[in-house]
Length: 503
Image (cartoon, rainbow, N blue to C red; front, side, top):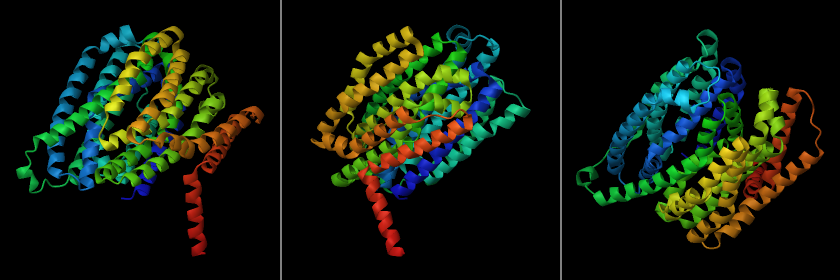
């Protein structure tokens, strides 16, 4: 499957997932209430924390599957590695699930700041969350293998189907069955079981036969190299998860559950920046790994730069909209003035931070493809030592706004101080060209367009009119970003030339 097809499939699937999640959220608030939705926000946090148990296994398996797909390693090794990781995943997920179930009452009564919901109902919901999070963690293992095989068209089609069941079909469930937290999470548990069963079946359907090399395949050193790489990813991922989720964890303790719901909604709105860019990484990592394994450095760097421009011309307009016009975005989305008042200041900070985060991920992609994460590990250690105390202080002292400023500062420091070091390590001279050629024009065009709109545009009053204006302004910023991208301009010229030849 071509990279363009995989990127398109990833974008289409991810766009659907994002749009459906955004569209139905006001209905969630209507049927569940703000405090019950706070439990949904806590569940999102819980799933992120469960990813600590991944231990770098999923990206490692994805990389190995990509190498098998590129015929640079043997299928027998992938099969052995998958069986080993299945055992580890199931054991750790089950243990984590049992621990959380055992402490569900403590979490409900002593950690979460519940004001109106029945505490027994909250406890039951937390127990169900534990099981769902464990099942989805195990499912991620098989998603990694399928992604490494570049079966992204199927994977995104399946994601669309499960998203529809998870977010859309739950609305009639609210109407005809009930909308209590326990019922909501029971419904999600059923879907998680179905999802895992399908992912397992498809993974083993596409897994290549071990082949004759399996009999001679006692190459323990090669597996040790893979596991060493896995541990590197695990440590980096664990540190990054702590850095990116400790604010949410602390706020779940100090904020009333209803206020935590508003904070979660602001973070969800800001996550639109990363949602629109995530499909590129899903398609990019296997292809970069294949090019690195084949030793095609020029093709790797060309793809790296073009992918940077693609992500930037999508991420920057979304980030600018959230940062410059958070009140209008939230009002058009929810029509809830109380939510707008609480969430807009947080959305502004997290949108800017996520815009930087989308670009800051690229040096990691480069290190991942080359199988050398030492510098990435060092950078994460520095963040852990220096920035987490700042994050704790800001969050406990200033609440959600402090968390937002910390998030923005964290990503700004990474972008300005660490990315140049990584680029210099892997390709001297890369960073200046990356900034000038791949990011500079796009950033300048979107910032200029957003600044002029902020200064000059008079917003209408009606919600529908505001929504139409938000959409139109977003499209305008996307056009401006495309004009600032050499890759986008070249793609447009090439399509125009081909069209002219056919005409």
